[in-house]
Amino acid sequence: MLLKGFALGSMVSAAVAASLVITVVRSDQDQRAFGEVVSAHLRSLQAEHLTDVQTSDQHTVKPCFNGRRDVAPPVVDLTAQGFMLIGGRLDYVDGRAVAAIVYRRRNHVINLFVAQGAGSERSAKAETVQGFNIRFWSEQGLNFWAVSDVNTEELQEFVEKFQRTARAGAGM
Image 1: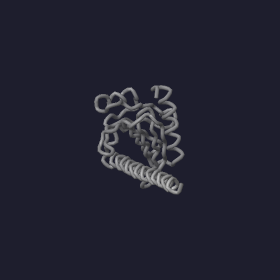
Image 2 (image 1 turned 90 degrees about the vertical axis):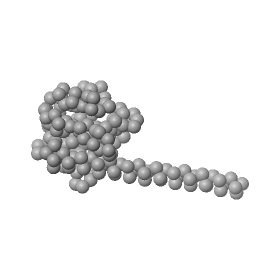
Image 3 (image 1 turned 60 degrees about the horizontal axis):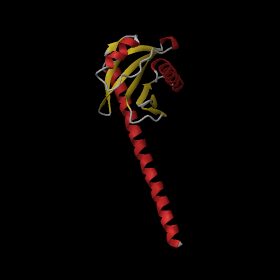
Image 4 (image 1 turned 180 degrees about the vertical axis):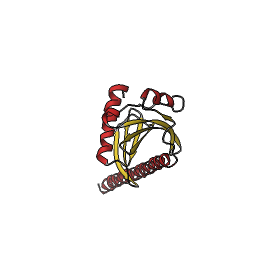
């Protein structure tokens, strides 16, 4: 009886330790990804390389990613909702090519990075890194990072409007 209790206790301890390791590793990967998207955001502002394709026409921006990315990201025009589409560019996050769709809210730039995701599960996370607000979400096999110095409420508003419009128009 004592041996069964010891074995059960060992199994529970091992499971807890394994889940803790997975949580720590995932958290570290998330922090690295957030740091990478902030770096890409800053590079786009400092190098005067905000867009490869400068246009407010979503039908011009989306095709510029065809053949340059495995998946063309959803591109929506949110100008009427207060977030002007500026254009798009190819960028790199964590050593892999990602689409960057660029929006402007008054004098603030919002970079929306889109990359192929690992699965179809949905997730979301909000962070602030180096003074920049980040909203991450995963949907339909794509990972999205919205990065800007707009306040957290406005960035959340952008994300909600982007998601709603993309789902309605692009079948997301």
